[in-house]
Image (cartoon, rainbow, N blue to C red):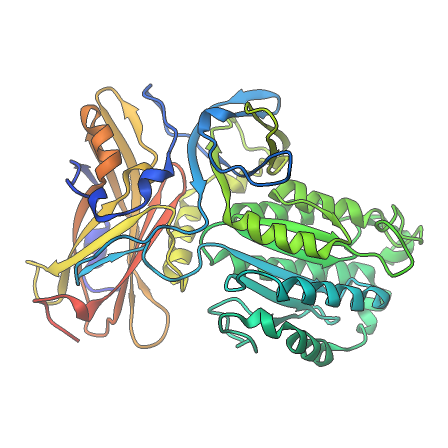
Length: 524
């Protein structure tokens, strides 16, 4: 633990925050976040449902100038009020000039979105492998920018093989630099040669084993992709896996239903802000998707149904053999669109399916988003989940930027082993709840100390209640709000990461500061 932080972390505080003049004057981009919020009194929701929305016109082009009032939401047939509304821009505008000891999570060069292409060799037919490889190659050679595109093979042994792996992964992939996709032809050829194997005997005779192996690999990929901030897309090129298998294939005389695995995994994808874009392959000479029984009554029921549910429950879409369209649209839709959060007003999160319908009041606009969700009790945000969100953000190699943050570091009156931190929040990025004549936002802070090696040392979460007078709210939204912390730092510290979580919306922000850049303080 960071020295002396246990005492600090046990002190909950309510802070009266006044806007800091000139916060927008330095060129930060949070005025465009456009959060929806009414002036009426609100009580904290138990859990907000998050929708990532892509709006398309009649020509299939994205529509980027919609406001919150242009959307209507029905949950289980009942209208719901939008609580949070933001536009997902292609990139976050970098701040203007920052002082030497001021750091922003909107000036970092890390990724703000990502698209992962998963070429599924485990569940393909050999006859379609060449076609899929050709389409992947042709698509990637033509992309405008491949910086935020990654490519994995799911091998015949159920292992994820990085052709271009996600940043921060333990296994170095052959392609890491910008413009890597221009070399995709030799890279993919080499990867296919390296992984060209026969399917292990247990996967050939045991369909259940292959399906479970696929779900395990997808969960592993989800965990890796979730570390990247913002919207993510997975383009899954596959023949799919059955949603049920019959007695002959199960080996025990029973039908096996995999709906539970599918529901749990898609809920995890959705919670991690990942949309799945399945591409259904058919061997040459065959048209359309795999049929209900895929030519074998005992093999399984509807791999297509499985893939369609992955798309419907995560906000992606399914493609029939069109690899190029899936890659192009998966990449583009990870970068643009709208984020909406609404209160489902559920009395109980009981695991039941809730159908969602989102309409746009502007004529000619078509909406793409997830079509529903399962109200699993574990998806309602709990203290354990909030702690896990703080810890995973602290350990991530990337900065989270849902909450815009600036941190100014100066010497601390607490002593030479401490830093004084002025932490400035982008006002519109927090969910402010009104009570009488004031607005408040409940936030948790966590500080991570990084040395030369090993895992970060984490403080306990520090609860903060930010409060502003109702008369000051408009100014706070424009100019931001700030809190001050004096943070003890150990001799071994090289970097400190500040993480903030909004308890109401679950939005996260983080900033990393090098400890030896603070003027006037002790250097290590």
